[in-house]
Length: 382
Ligand SMILES: *Cc1c(COP(=O)(O)O)cnc(C)c1O
Image (cartoon, rainbow, N blue to C red):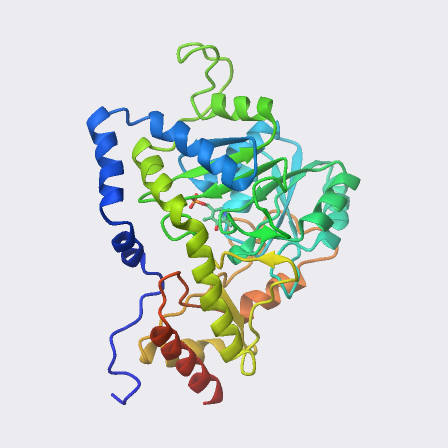
């Protein structure tokens, strides 16, 4: 052991720091639910849905059991099914493409932008062309706000409109991110998010929500999340699923949402320090002018082949890293049967070989950050 390695390992994400900050308010919120025992769609769910919609600037929010279900509700709400094609990036978490298959449609993989890691609007025309050549009807595109940075929604909307595609924004990692002051929540016809504990706005289990300005779509998604209910629970007008946001999770989320703006600021302080200290030795993340990221991940790029040694060197110093994502979806065993759009996905493949993420959360103090920075610099310089 040398001087750099005798410190305790740094956590990749520290949920306990936030738990300490929220303190008794959180216990009281959960306690209220335990007292009234309305565990499914209790009053806290309705209250949180209203707060969430307001935060995202949308008219409606529909809570559900996970971010994956939120995407399913969006696609089902759009009426997408067999014979339809759904365009999505190949460089993302699997759920983005999984949901297209779950509703019976075909995902078509489109490339991402090398600087932002997000869906490249220029690939949409090629994806549409491929869908049509296969006899599919291109119906929707799912841009992802990857690692906390909003996608280029203006360019994506222009391309989607030109091809008649509906937009379902996958903001599982990018809820709270903004472009020129406008937060994710209304960039698509619907916006899905996840409250998985490690996401920027996470709960204490699984949870998700869909936001939309369209009241009919919100009603339809509310019906689908409740077994396709009509005028009441025992009137079934369509095939649905069982996917609610637990009342306890809604109570937790209302407390967390109060401090979320402050946490976004804290994440940005961490990211700027990393940027300043690391830009001369690695490729640091790009945030375009006018964009504010919520930094679900702080992801750098290394020269191809350098990643394994880099991760091992950091680990030896107690600094954890993670690779999001080592294999682009079009090369995954479960997904390689699905088409890649015309134009290919070369950038997704390159990124999958080069990216690595460093510890990032709102409670990462300067001293801990300095340890990460020093370890990165030593690992890169060898
Ligand atoms: C986490 C995530 C999801 C799925 O959310 P779950 O709540 O885990 O189902 C979907 N898309 C992206 C991009 C994600 O990161």
